[in-house]
Length: 470
Image (cartoon, rainbow, N blue to C red; front, side, top):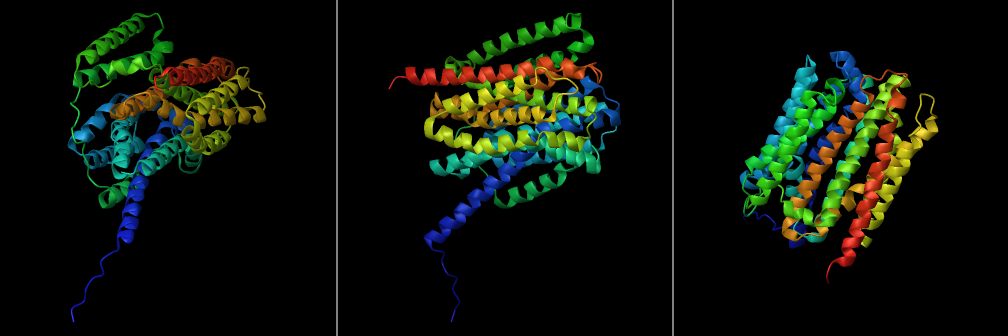
């Protein structure tokens, strides 16, 4: 008698297929956790990095921004490469580049090597962020299941950025600042193994053309504009190099708009900005990440330099921010699903504004309860912001342009992160422990102003919904 293998029932096949889809989501979330974590985990270790490698405030700003600038500049092109050459292939390449660059960061003997390796990390991360989302969308054919998956994916990214300072403080205290980069290596190895086992290969039915002129001009605009903000306190805001940088930024921006308006498949279609809601969402994405990164950098220097707190204590002080973001991010997604983006945007703007205003009178003796309250309010605002911004960006556009809209808002977020670090670093550059609190006060007004921008985005989203023809 010949043994036969039982044929799985359709129900069992469906369960197995569902398990694989959610495993794919878990792998992509793991990679996104890395990308978000490395945007903020380094902040709390900056004073230790500065002491270890002899880097001043401006050099430390480059340590953070070398990563976010490259990530912001390459996100859209990396997504196009994945559509053309295979998403799993580009995703795995990104993991390898990110992991190798993390090793170099951990072993960096000098500031120059560390900054260069951080830029290489940004190259790898740019292959993970948009590609992971495309893999998730491709693996989830059911619209309702896909919506849940995207919500989880976005929540993990927001959570990773919020918990970065807490994790960083613990690592620096236990193992030193180099552990901030060593920790990436086992996670990358696990992600590579899981990707090989579970993530299917996929490509776009029709790959977009690469827009190399647009990519070069976008990178120039982002790099020069943020670079002059970082170096401005050192070279002088009206010096010849600074004036030249302003001119290059304006010329490159004008050339970018002209080039993109004439290409059949532009990197960033200027026509998208005819939608007031989309334009508002992009500005909102920049504002949210400016606020978050200004908060993290000013908090790191204030608590460790002015108050003399240890890295773990400084990291724990941001725990209310992480908790606010963690609790409110999924709640925001549900609110968007039920009633649209207006209410979460209003809540996000209100909490951010209130948190910034709490600290506009900051001095070296400001009470800890007020600090914790401000961080909780800012974290809550951040948690409410991400889901409605993404929804606002894509809801007013045709479905075929939703992916492009998502990529542009991701770029805006990273540009906001780089801009926030540059602005905060410029405010406290050269300030000693005694004067740092006073020097940082304009930064808290900036955080409150970012909240007001979100309130404006909320107004634009409601207004466009009212005037849209039925």
